[in-house]
Length: 158
Image (cartoon, rainbow, N blue to C red):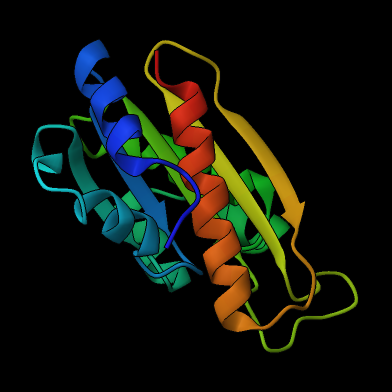
């Protein structure tokens, strides 16, 4: 499914003793699935949170309702809190979060294909970014977001 060598990503995490968690919204667990498709991933992949609704983001990850109200679910502020929440609610060392608009639809202010990512690592500053994948259709946006998240994890390990 992915151009990222997930087996290599897991081997690097294993070598460095890094446990990984995911916090996913628009990808619905696709990053966790890509990681767990590789046999032996259980010693690296700690857990995944699929928080599709705002209530799930609040209840499972501790995203603040005020953040959701002020910025909306598809925002770097929410991606930050999702990634940090995944670390806080797991034994992982590194967490990636994804929240976006896979489509169809979107709005003038939040178009289809906009995806916000968070990358949190214990002892380091959390990084966030937004990628505009464009209106390529739901399946393609989700696939591109999964690939991007795996790339973020791969570059952060080590």
